[in-house]
Length: 144
Image (cartoon, rainbow, N blue to C red):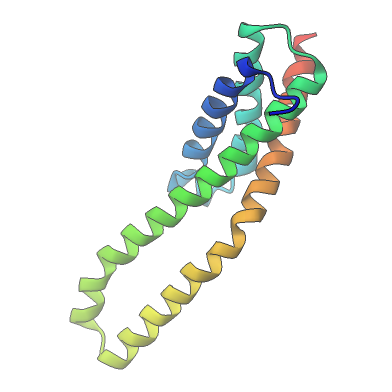
């Protein structure tokens, strides 16, 4: 895997998944706190790594960035899943209360927005990676 040490893998995934799950909670997502939680994923990763071995600054940056990227991907995935569930719950209501034409327009618009959200994957990953790296750097600097 290049520069990534074996003992970095578990903390990277734990930090990324925790940050991604927390940032995909609808209430938190509405507050636009995802970048702070991506930073938190980098901090969690750095903390867990420091329990395993004595990381260098480069270790903190790389692991934090990877953790933040995973957090962004998890956030995007869970956000899409939540959107599908909410949309699925709305369908019976829309069928009963909206005329057929309006219902068809609404479902087409929602389907288009779901497809358009696929284009956001790299944005979530990049923002997550940058924020996670910042979290790793912050932890590394505060620890010293």
